[in-house]
Length: 141
Image 1 (cartoon, one colour):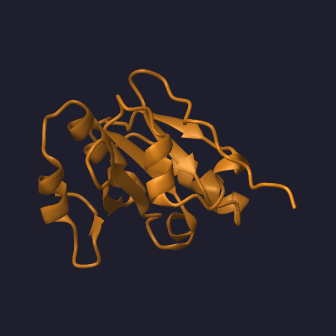
Image 2: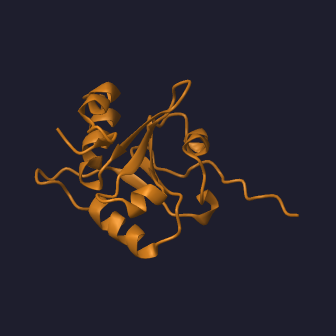
């Protein structure tokens, strides 16, 4: 029996956060999610992400994706099955570089807020966690 594919470390540019697709069940939802992520906020803010759309990452766990993230990256964003099917497309944001990666869901329209503010150290992870709704999804301040 052939061994499962071992995904390579995530490709990403120096100043961008990887957004990794791990669910390939619904192409239309994926394309819609990309439109939402690529639409600037009312104040013209936009998440700076590198789209990683490669079946080699299909069904990878958040821990596995975090382990494949370059060490200089503080975050990785995951478009998993839940992100493609739930209202608001709540992406999974994983804080990397710590002993145990921390996770938080964010609706696509607010991805810019987490990505911009954490990348540039304007805010702390815990501020977003505290602002998340009871279901664990950050929908803005």
